[in-house]
Length: 188
Image (cartoon, rainbow, N blue to C red):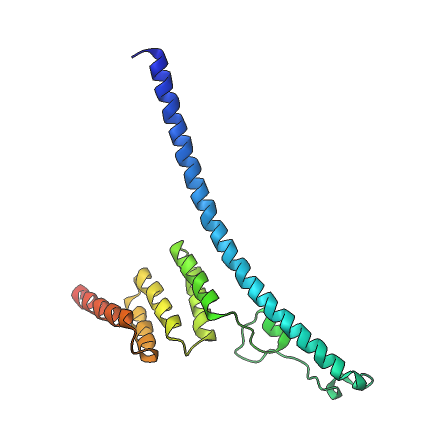
């Protein structure tokens, strides 16, 4: 081969490596962007809820303005305190009651983190979803899937069983419980 062909071949290889490197960086940035978009959506939902609360408080203040020369306790407002068991997030502290996001947003974020193998963050999202929506079959199903992916068979089965108790038609839960129990017995 001639020198020109070798140089051309080497140049092509270098360019291919650079393209592959850039492709990997783009994929990583796209994943990070997806997470940030989901977090942004969560914050927007919380912000919308706060705007409604502020409007409600303003309306209550205006309706009680005739009592404005009296002490705060006599104008229809109680000092808001965080009730035991409520999350310590800013919104709940501010309003004195639990402010939650819609179930699907917690779930969406949980699955996004799970897809990125950020299992602790996924666990926190699914845990918050269970705390906020304990009567939902789906929240236990999602937690069961995460725990199964992490290899926590016993807790995964427990979550799938809770899901199945709330929704006896959950065929996916039935199948996975059976499969995990068979595999668990086989490992003993």
